[in-house]
Amino acid sequence: MHNAISTKKVLYLIIGIVSLSFAYILFTQQQNFSLIAMSGIFALALLSGILFVFPHLSPSFSKRFRVIFPSLTILSAILILYEYFFDLPSPGLLLGAAGPVFYVSLATAISLIGIYALGRFIQRSKGNKFLYSVIGIVIVSALAYSSMYVINSVNWNGVDETAYNYYSAYLLVHGQNPYTQSMQPILHQYNIFPTVQLDGTYEYAYSYPAFSFLPFVFIPLLGITSLMSLIAVLIFISVAASFAIYYKSGFNRLSLVLIAGWLFATYSLVGVVATYLSVSLLLLLAYLYRERSHLSGFLGGLAASTTQLSWFALPFFLILTYREHGRRAAIKFAAYGAFAFLLINGYFLIASPSQFLNIFGLLGTSKLPYYGPNIMQFIGTFYLLPQWYTAVISGITLIALLALYYMYTERLRPLLAVVPMLVFFISWRNISIYGLSYLPLLIAIYFERPKEIHKAAHKLHDLAKTTLPIAAVPIALIAFAVILAVPLHNSTINGPGLAIQHAWPILEVQQGYYGTQFALIGVKVELNNTSEYSQNVSFYVVSRSPNNEAYILGSELNVSMAHTVSNYTINYQLPLVDNGTELLVSGFSTRYTYTKILNLSSLGNVGCPPLCTNQT
View (spheres, rainbow, N blue to C red):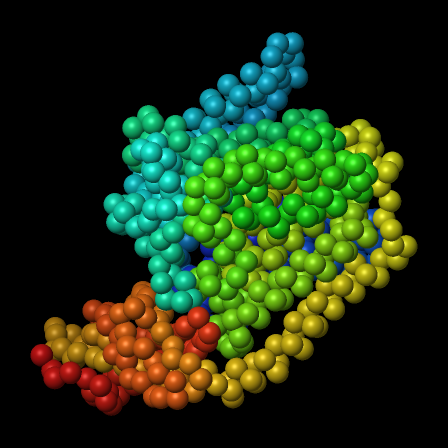
């Protein structure tokens, strides 16, 4: 059994956490202009997944590939340095974060010291350890929060999902069903830009299960109106998850190294509170107490009732329960999970069935947003494919790795946490923010106390007798994805669809102190719709030097009729552009995506480009 973890393995895991964090930090709109940059950032994300899994493999397997670990570590470091110093628009971008880094480091140090001290106290205490633990976690969380947001005053408006969690709790307190109400008022109140979907509409409906807002009802009840309160809750969840890992590891100090990396990334990137509640805490507890299948199942049901991100892990939990404790325990796990889900969501399902069932829209393509460090963003920019491609590949990957997990449950135990990250990465979501929430579960897998592993492991034996499938299945998945992508790309390019035939900047020329200067006041796009359908086309414009982005929704533009060429004038303004300015213009609908990059390098050479206004 692989119940011990060495310092060397911890080093590889912490490098994986750093790689995952930098995959998000380095991903800006500027990477849309560089194939190398975006490929490098994706490589960082995949390397992190490999580093998360490999240390858990059997010693014989690891010995055969003993060169892999240091090679991946070196490659990860090279990619981080390359992206930071060469591909970012300003090599000193992160230097401006010196202040926040200090406060985050302080909060991380306070959290670690507090967790360690609480652990020492619990070890020596003979009283109510659970009560003492809760009180200690509250104190540590308050100190960590104060070090970041009280000593250092911060104004934070939140993101749309966080605002939705708060507003839904507010609506419930005031006797309204969140699933039948628009979330638009809270976005306007806090000036938060909503998620834009591939159909060119804003996401104003509440599309998360009910436990994503029910635990936060106390916030509006107390009259708290600041979304900073949800950060305080997130920090409490993070500290609670960290202490649970430390406690269940038998107070293994080595676990604090990985906890430190996770807390630093969490405090830096400020994840979504409901996601952390669902995955970082509820799924973590479901794993740590899985020998009690009824409790584990109920916790899993609560996680499923919080965010859909947990759904992709629950099949792995079911397999693990079956392999460790047998069919009866697996049935009990599933039954208690279903009971918890219906208990939490039943009222809203009955009260507004059509609106509540919107939570399952995640499984289709209509909810896809057009951004983020994921494969969809890559193919939308550099290698056009049908929009269903990523959903199909991620589904096949999930099923194949579930089968592999069943065959090698013990040796591939980290897949429980890694595959959900991977599924979102190869589909349409931000791997770092969602992936970070799974790290407590991953850390717990490596730091279970030996006696707890052995207690259940006598029933657990890998079915397969060879390690070949462990390497063969991922290779086959990659090969299948690549082979399928080539003809689909050709059919997308040459077949019916949308194509930006031409795009021109609309410039205003000004005579200023430094001579002739140019301001961008719009973009003209000639779009060819060769499909059999009329398309409601939206545009996403990104600029580099100066850096900016904007969505132009299809609801504001004319419909592109089938078999016609349409001209669009996009209102996109930049006060000063020069030879270094680049524009990326993406046109997308529910069926098609097409991207074109404009380089304004001829501004100083030819005077006034074709689409200039009169000089002013």
